Image (cartoon, rainbow, N blue to C red; front, side):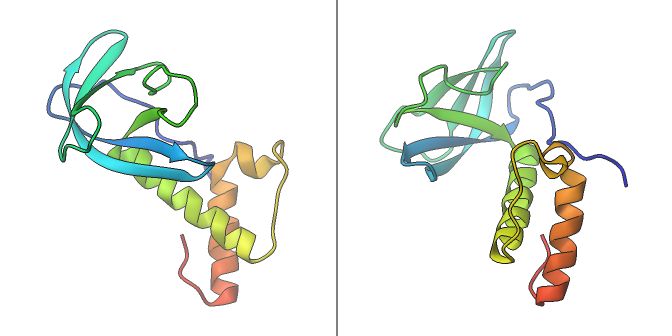
Length: 134
C-alpha cells in the first residue's frame, strides 16, 4: 500500500479556482466560498470570491500556510485548492466512519501519519457496517 498525503499547494496562476474557508466561531464552524485566483506572487495570492459575502470580495492569503495571516480567531480564513478540498472531505468522512464505529486513535498513531491506512481501515469498517465507504 502506497503512503498517501494531503495534496501540496502547487503553483497558482490567475483564473485557478480555489475555495475560501472562513471560520465563524467554535471549533467546527466555518463557511466555504468558491473563489478565483486573480493575482499570484511569491509570498501572497489574491483571490476574488465568486459570490460576494458581506465581507471583502477580494482576499489576500499567504502561500506558505494558505491563511490570511490573522490570528486564529473568529475572523480567521484560509484557502484550499479543489484537490485539497476533495482530499479533506474524504479524510473527514473516513474519520467520521471510524468514530461512528468507536475507533479512536492518538495523535502519534501511524493512522495520522499515513493517511492510506486511515482510508483503508475506514473503507473496511464501512463495508462491515453496511454504509457508504469514504
